[in-house]
Length: 384
Image (cartoon, rainbow, N blue to C red; front, top):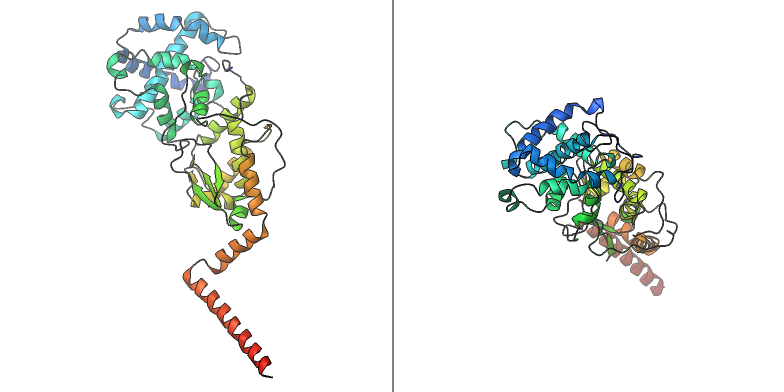
């Protein structure tokens, strides 16, 4: 979708469900349609409306919703409106059941199977599987007053739903306009942008290919997770400490990153996520680098092993182009610090000889013994 349109040249393939018209009717995705109808049956009583009322409301969305897709949607009016109703009610009901146990059914066939809910979340972050956000927001707005008085805003519910699977920030401070939001992928990108956006232009200068996590550690740089950050992209280097907000690696992380990156590329948006992944990929070059980030609490790994994590960062930006570099100043400060031999020598001494009290004591004793030997030799020479 365009900042209001959709594209089909996308990474990832829908596993079990179709959302929106682009993949509607595909045989391999039909099994999920029964689940969506069950969710619709649960959703309708929450609105106080009849199915006929929902149809009348959805028809007012049809023209605008069709214009949100780059391709000509060759479906009749009734078919298209049916998709809007079933898929939008499914997404809202899914979010309600995800966040509030009181709204879930006794035998929920999606949340009752871990693999199925993972696959569902994988599919709803694919760019080709998006509904216009105003349709989902409109369906959420049809909940009767008793629900809306106690529920948080839809953006908050979506953020909380994906927080388990993705970045772990406690809240987001940016003001996000529903009217300017294109779809879920756009919203998830917007949630994690800095509160004050400002993107540098110009060309990115050459980056030192040896500046991995292992190398900066060998130069004495400390790695620290930014536990209280309100922006997932807020990376800083100060007082010999590289601070990075925690990164959750789950089964859908790679899919979500790839679709956000493609969204930035297709619509020529400020490439915050492209540059964020470029910065991280500079340091997570090997399984050993990934282990360092995991051991320091920066990466919370819920998927595979360290090799899988390093492979993700090394492959995610292939065939991706960009200009400028959002983290240029941070990177250059790191590079300058690590290129100073004195810093590497200090780090080596601290790591190899002063890493515990006994090692430090033995080094001091050796230095004292060496000094005493030197003094004794000097005194012998003077006596002669």
